[in-house]
Length: 236
Length: 359
Image (cartoon, rainbow over all chains, first blue to last red; front, side, top):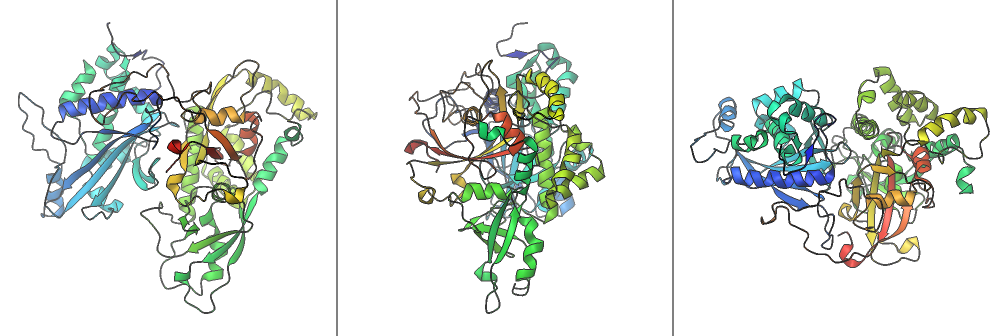
């Protein structure tokens, strides 16, 4: 085996990663996202401190994807829901479709805006997804409304998995209430994810693929999907 | 160190659990509908407790004057809304640099600033936050939260009640089952104690002293100044939460033979950007510093400057209302001064250059 990136022996791996590993994984993730998701806003790295002189610890920060819009049609709730999450994929030979319920611009009134941040948790040693939602006028959405935006299978995932639930907590850096997907089971299912995938397993775990794999699961809870092409870069 | 050695572990716990902050709580003008306005309420708040839990004491003082509506309790200090999930003692140590006794706070029963503060629905919210922190501490210490998740219902109730009521005995009875006793080394135990209990424990302590590394749950609240202040009164006021850097990161114990790990070492290890010369670096693998994707704007830039950083200076450290000597073994601080959810909360003031100041 001929690996360019850092490889971990799969057996003792506990599904977690260090802060600097998170930085590497974040860079790889945002770069791939840009490559496979050209028509969608990119994930940006936001350094956490306000200092300009920091040299060795610029790595501290988080990934940010802001201004995603969820379009609601004026039809009834039921069909609206299935409509917003149904992708209109036009998978061609040349490029993968963007399988997100997003549209960058819209003049429609009923637009819910979403901001997503992927923040590293030093306690749990895993990434954590934070998000918030607001109307076009900036008014935050109550959770009841956010739930309506989430895909049907999200509630199922959240109720079945004792690990994945949404709570409201203060953003680690921004001093504001955000929603987050609770991290306490992450390391366990990340470990299972790798153990269960013989292709990944065979090549050993590569740090740069961590976030892609992580996001393939977490994204489903909030309805953000990873393009197939991006997932394939992890397996081969 | 002789000062620390004369206080046994149990005495220290008692002092911490009995610690309280006298509060003089004024109802906000906008919510006073009667004349004369009600006098402020004088309340003794446990350091280890949380402000929303004071509602039962406060309500009787102000209920007759409140405008109609649903109670949504929140507090502010000089215009700064207070984060209710931070223990009262920590808020006091952080925001009241020159300790004000009693501490003058303003209470609101209406108009909750939900864009700024997490919602709080009374005791349940506080309890949830407490248990959540406890799980996090368990995860940090043991790598999983099973011990907390598997607590019996009655144990959970008793644990929370003991925190509510400040009942140390009851708390110790239940919390010992969690086996979250953190860090032991030859400096943890009271050196001058000669009771048999201590001698029985010394065997265990020796064994534990073999442990060279571990993670300790710590929450650091850092604020910066750019100039020395002669006395606490002239220290700048924290009027904005953006001026406080909240660092929720475990301390990784790294023991070097022949040297103990001090409080100073612990704090510096959590602030590598301010103490680049420190030998303890908490941010993980130093080897993976290569820049990736460097040609892209706004993604991960390579290091753009290599200006040497001056070391910051620690001006003030407060834990449970005391300013410990920084050379105290960190293990002692952890075992004696941590909060019931097993987190050690440390308020730190750093003196830095203008460019490095927060906000």
